[in-house]
Image (cartoon, rainbow, N blue to C red; front, side, top):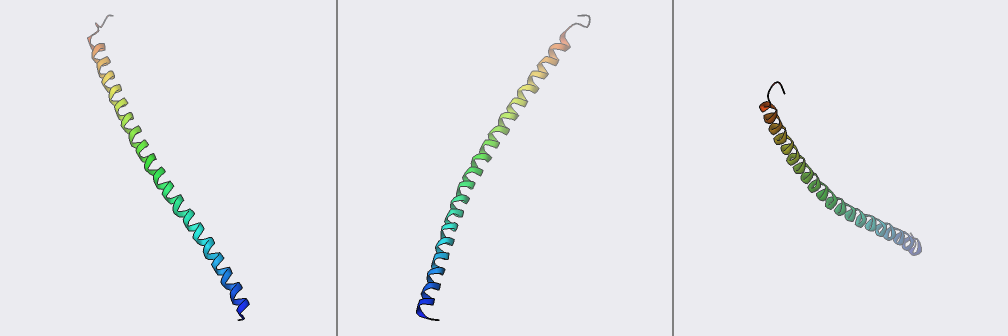
Length: 77
């Protein structure tokens, strides 16, 4: 292998490593962004589920109060 051929080969390999390094950096950045987004989505889901439980509890309480009031109404009304 001549010096020029080796130099061209070496430059090509360096270029490929630089490209790979850049792609790896992009992958790490994407992974970090997706982890943060996943954390935010999990928190939003937990908040929504908590709110849904509170609403469901309020509905159950209102239903029980209505049933109690209906039971107190006279039969012929």
